[in-house]
Image (cartoon, rainbow, N blue to C red; front, top):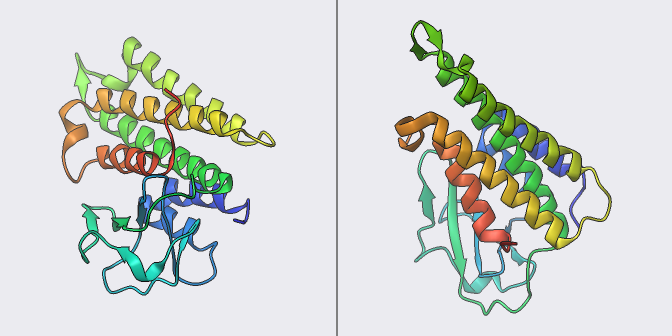
Length: 212
């Protein structure tokens, strides 16, 4: 069982330092080198091909782990890599505490992205006014902030169901996509802030079953 404090710690690391630091916080909750795989056998970790793996969680044979043809697929600019297991996936989903901690992590990435969007818009003007001060954009930023507040509040509730966790992950995905729209083309450059949304959505795809 993961320490409940890991989620908020991962959220803080995501806001301050980005995806790799946050994912390392989550994995620090295991004793020994561990990889967490999702319901389809895939996962994401801060690993290299040469790193030893003691076990796969929730279950699996580490000796049969295939790190994407022995070379984990790098997620550019993040320090993270994707992996896949060749074991049959018959153990359902990662335990609820992982998905809860992951929601905290994604909230941190989403707020980091929102801050980057505001910085970007502050540097662009229309008629001498920063774009961040335009009424329509202020409304869009407010909607994103409200989504973050809703998720933060919900994460503090006891005994969340799988559907409730799934809804929160969907809400974070929607908030990130709204933020990308405000960045325009700048949201899709390899070394831009849009990579935060990309990695966050990949994490959700790997570990969370959609509620839609």
